[in-house]
Image (cartoon, rainbow, N blue to C red; front, side):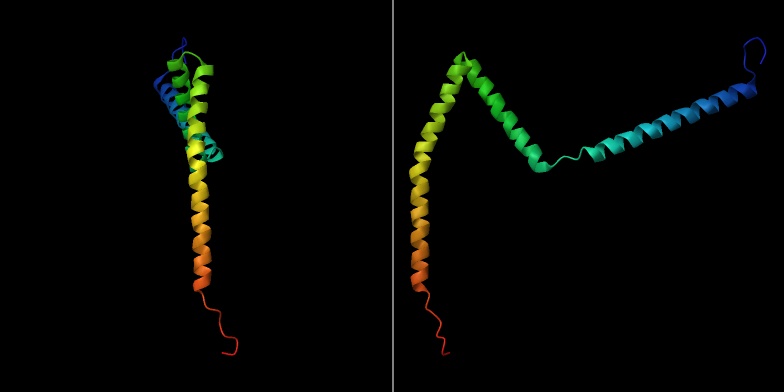
Length: 117
């Protein structure tokens, strides 16, 4: 090297070192990405639950914006939930009664086995 300049041989060695360094950095970066992806595996059910909860949150924010406050928006949600609970209670009781009656009817239709054979 003379006067701070590299000759052709030194420039070629410098370029090769630079290319090797870039390749090493790229490999380390990709290895790190693979490691983090393996460490942060996501469960599809949990992601679905998170997505549904996010939608509920957005809906509640929209209700609050439409009604002018979170208190009135929450009141609307409470009213709708009470209506749904009032309608679902009797329907659920009727379904349970029907299932119980079906089981009793099925039990009457079964003949006991004769142990004598």
